[in-house]
Length: 404
Ligand SMILES: [Zn+2]
Image (cartoon, rainbow, N blue to C red; front, side):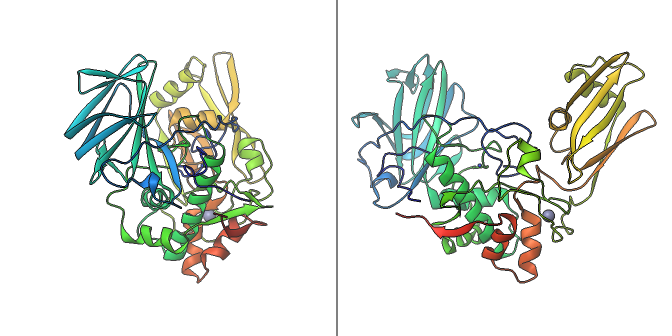
């Protein structure tokens, strides 16, 4: 398939547990919603220095920076802003605070500008403490200010890797993950989440926390796999990934209700050294009552929480909560979300009531679909290359350079 550079072609644009498809929480559990349209932001002219959008052949991805609400602080030695028509509208030195006022943007507490502008800094720009290697587009939407970093794709891949993978991972495992991160991003760029951005810089998509401080191992993993993506029958694959599968990956069909041929359950005997290969969480009586309440069951002394259905890989798919004659069976993913993704780390779990609390024991961390990161690292340590790793977790796919 042919993918075009975001800006050259005018195209605008899958975690945390890393790399769930759009809108699928780290635990998985919800279907993939339709994506937005492909409206095109045009880069403003680079009056300060050649800003990345003008560098021919560079692909970009538009990342919604998390945390923005009413106000965004830009920092840079020299900051300039352009309207969407490309005309310069403002400049500042050092620091500028932008705020949304309805559908317009207020520049440094005084001037009221239009509802969208592009800002760039020289020599660089920080947005709410994050360095962005490119430009940022600011958009006022009903009193909220969205900050969308327009980041060179390869810088994005290295930056995401630095947040999604441990530095000590084997270079081949990092290379495999780099290809997965890039493929996810390229897929998002082809079908953007929102007319204004391709991905969210959080676990909703892939964690992005700026392009600074990215260790050399991550940049090298991106560099040596530059442009490589995973294709299934010529289309970008949904290269979802997770921390640790606990021995067997999950099928997309059971996690998200949609069968995807290359996202079917695989045996994985390489993640046993993951710190979360086995885990235990003791949910207190008070916490169990809170969770029950949150999930619509008023808790009494006879509160019961039990797994009532499992997928073929042994992961919980349904949980029943009952008390005082009220009984509710829900998706296990709802239970995990309410209890906390970092406590109930996966749905490969057992819940046992014991002395007024619940002892929850489990295996792995994350939704379990696609590539198991610790499994990838285990394979690499056994001598596997990144292509072999990708072939195991995304069987039936090809690795290819995207057409420019
Ligand atoms: Zn595994």
